[in-house]
Length: 484
Image (cartoon, rainbow, N blue to C red; front, side, top):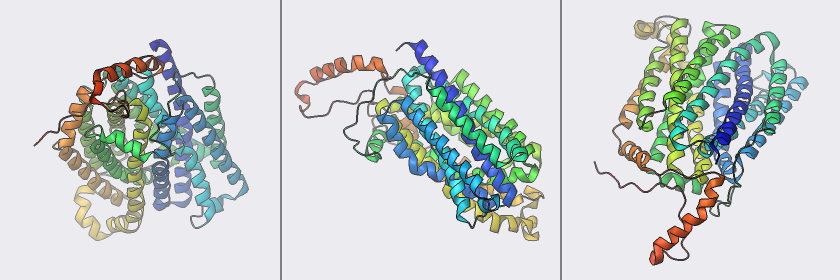
């Protein structure tokens, strides 16, 4: 494959992903701001955040199978069309029903309106899974960590833009104009995709994946990479703790700022995404990305424990800035490992399983934490007993209950990452990453596939049954199991 053409295609895909991520994040943030400002309900914002991740968990595995079965360009076009249609339906519903009905948590219109918007945003996960496999397709192995850093940078730009404009749009324009902006922007991603060309061959159908939900094929690919399942489980646990911040970060910020100011605060803190992604794009992740991931998670836990110790906005904003700077290397590390140790033909399904498991964790926490915070912890911390017990550490303020929850969530994350260093799975996956062979992907791989399989058959001779399936190209060898 011509590397200049491949890199140009990757750049175009990144630009298109930027537009799409900006649009979906813009509308999701705007919905969260709008609902909280109008209802003042932590429970409502927690439900919105949790529902988004729950939708991702439900659909991600099917998304992974779709990515493996179809050209990546076609998958991205499908994502743009579905999101645009969903946002348009939400716009029609907004014009049809009065805002009072759409904001009534006891009425079906709130759930329908929010659900349609969230579904349009969740379809973006289909594009993100395709993008992860496109990195493997278009970027050479020794540059994939850097490319994953660029993906993190793009996500940071999207977060920065949406943080500012979601607050401004809700504060000055309202929900109706915000929906219109999202519909137009998503239409632009579709138009841009018409001019993007990705050099890729037609995927061969997997005879072992007859259904749209190929759980068996995903599990097989994961099991053939020792330690990979443990990595996905750890990332799932990380998201379990992350659900605490997802449910409580916006309500906490909106006690310190109004909607417009909170948007600018999020915009500043999201520049951490840019810096973290740029550092990965420049320097990579080192030779041991699994180790890098665990160290980064420890730092994230420490930050999560301290950036709400006082109700002081500089501490909160700077803490979020550093926290967000650590997110791109954590995500890039997991993606880089999967891109090397899993065959390209099954990467979509593995990324789908990872996304489903990790996404399923966050809504569990969000659905639990939001009502616990609103009905138990926050009232307790506002009481004299709560102030006597925790005031020495958390000080005084309107949202000390949120601070208490985040303190313990961060401590749990630090302990979990420290224990992970001692596991056999960590050692096995690190060794597998160091020894896995480079994969041949893209149109050029088709030319080599026949010769490779002929050589494999000649070398194996009578050692294999004529009915045995051919080896999967790019599958890493089994690593001998270490004994502690």
